[in-house]
Length: 334
Image (cartoon, rainbow, N blue to C red; front, side, top):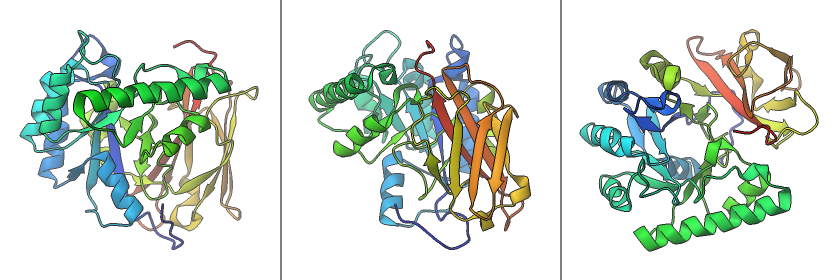
């Protein structure tokens, strides 16, 4: 990815949103109502946002190409039947492309799209991404077994994509947003452009494209005011110093150390950190070294926990930067 040294916000600020079910009240934690999903699309249309697929965004960033400032990416995970019945018609109505990540094992199941449905979605301009075959918790496995299982699963899904649709997806979405360095390496070797997680944030040229952020749009997170707020967030340009691996070892709570690419772009006094939305965090900022150290004030008990940082822009006080990191405890059952 191209880098920039000037004291300015990133050239690309692309909010990426993740949806699952549309109009399926049985599962509120992964559902958004039909009317609210339409409100999201209507806002994008009425306010001249440019919706593109995730692979197009990645290619443009990689090539240093130009994109309209108000560019957005919509993604859907799992290919639930409720998306096909309730969400896809609205995307077609508003002329919005999207990226649909499917796990090949469930296609054709009672609550999932069929291969015929998937082909129809492609014909409507929906991009397909790989969401694994088995949707397994790969990080639960020992290191050597994990790499072998992930590589085999990837091959099975790719073979099915080729057999059913004659394509090989170029982007991946980690099941549950869980990844490890070995999984990243395999995806790179296999020629993928990038892989999406399930942690919040904005895509830019500074992002790790094999751990791309996406704002969740389910439950309270999907409310219209929160959707609009996220549309105007900026990507906080940082690089992770340590640990570089989201899996929590013996040190709990874990410590995250990151470096700001350019500390001048933020109002240092405005930096905030959150642990899964709460203020139970300790934040140390060494402005001279541009380093931030974040640590929870309590032991992490959940399987997945987000550390989130926000900061006000020094040049545009009405603009805010956003960045997050997902920690994983494989020893905790889903």
